[in-house]
Length: 113
Image 1 (cartoon, rainbow, N blue to C red):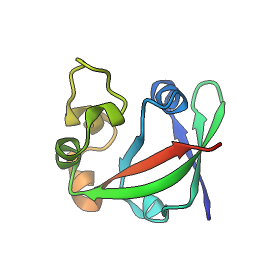
Image 2: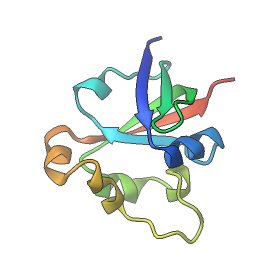
Image 3: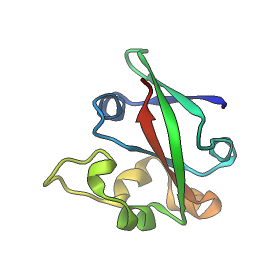
């Protein structure tokens, strides 16, 4: 078991904390390739500094966010019923060139007891 530390904006942090977001989406770069099922991720809220620990259940690797969004239920990604869902939401953080270079990962997580 390895501990990984990642920063999160307040909204996704809150969605994970309340159990509404079951997957954390990231670029599958060198840093994320070290995350394995059974590891722990400690998220830090970028504004408040609050910390939250989750267990890594599984990793789901896709060529890009478009493919990821076509494969996973939007509710598990933190979207609400009726909310507009678009893979382009992720392009503000990870441009298509970087997605092509590294692929992307949906990290399935559960809150630590």
